[in-house]
Structures are given as C-alpha cells and as structure tokens.
Amino acid sequence: MNRERMKELADAQFIERQASTAITTGETPEDIFINERPYRLVKNYREAYDQQKMAARFSNFLEKYDYLVGDIAADQLRLQGFYKDGTKGVARSQQISALQDFLYEQANFGAPFFVLENLAPHEVIDAEEKEDVKPKRRRRQHKNGVSKQKQANNKQGGKSPNKAGNKGNKPQNHRDNKKRKKTPVIKEKVHSAHQPEKHVGKRSNSVATTGSKKHRHFQVRERPKNEDKG
Image 1 (cartoon, rainbow, N blue to C red):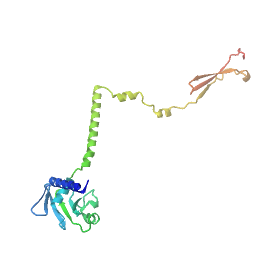
Image 2 (image 1 turned 60 degrees about the horizontal axis):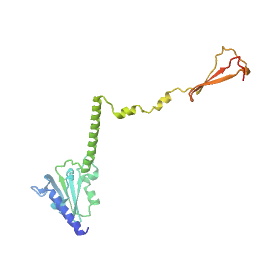
Image 3 (image 1 turned 120 degrees about the vertical axis):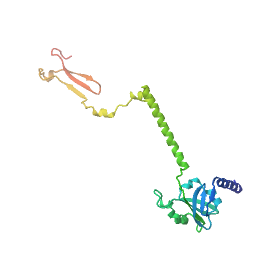
C-alpha cells in the first residue's frame, strides 16, 4: 500500500469521526458542548484547541474522566483523560495534579496543549467489560436450566441416570479397611489339658487347615491308639 492510499484512508476515517461527534460552543468560547455534554476550556496553551481535530479524536469512552488533556505532536492531536484530585481507587498518575509530570514525560517539550474540564462526567462501560459480562450470563442461564431439569425429575419421582448408575459402582472407602481389627494370619487349635498325655515319641499327629489362603486355621489331630504307623 503506497502513501497516497494510506493518506486517503486516514482522511476518510477523519471525516467519519468528525461526523459522529457534535461539538458546539456556548455563550463564551470557553463553554463547549460535546455530544450535548458540557465542558469548560480551562487551559489553551499556544492555541492548541481545534474543534475539527477534537471532533475527529473524541470518543464516548472519554466521558468518564473529569478532565481531558490534548497535546499536539506532528500536527496530530492526542487525548488523555484524568480524574479530579482525591478520587478514591485512582492512582496519583491518573489525577489532574500529575498534569505537569505527564507533559514532561509524555509530551514534546514546549508542545501546544489544552485542558478541558468535564462538568458532567458519568460511568462508561468498556467494550471489553461487556464481553466479559456475556459469558457470566450464559453460565447463569446454564445453571438455571440444569436446576429446572432437576426439579422436574424430582417431581416425577425419578433419579438422574448418572447417580443411579454410579451408586452401585461406588469405590470402597479405604478408611473402612483401617477400622478392621488385625487378626493373626495363623491360628492353632489344640486339645484341652484334661485329655491324657502321650509320650512324645509315640505321637503321630496330622494337621488340618481351614479358611481362606490369607487366613488359615491349623488344627492338630491325634491318631487313635489302635492305629499303627504305616
């Protein structure tokens, strides 16, 4: 894109912005109305204020500020908004008392500038804030829709399929295993002491096991007296 084409597009945009902003003056040149809202020209250093340039650069977003500062650089107007001193929740760099710091740091040395006081500032919702609000509203609608469906299911006496299907497959809590008393793995059962004793060499015992693999019970059984060893 050549320079001539870029200049044509810039001029067309300039004219379009001028048409969307209406600027009039009041009883005095210092009394200015922008889109039927009152402003007062409190500073006009080196005749910086130009109505056509102001109309081309103004945006409704600037209506929330208490002061508008415009400086000229390369025959282009730049606008910056400031709040009045003592505004809660506003940094000092955005208050009008920081005007000189802004001119020294941001504007060209000795550049023309003007200050407009907004006599009727009001809150303005940014376009980005509107986009952030829309998803929240959709989420609320989604939640309301789910709650309405649950209420309808409760009236019909039915349960949601997910809860009914997952109820039987609910995993066992590992805490239940901790509460169980630990029992010895092997238990031995012996005969009571009132039975007649036998000589150790003559005993021929057999062992019987019962229970699961993890919990086996061993019981010692004695052979009858009349049985001989095979």
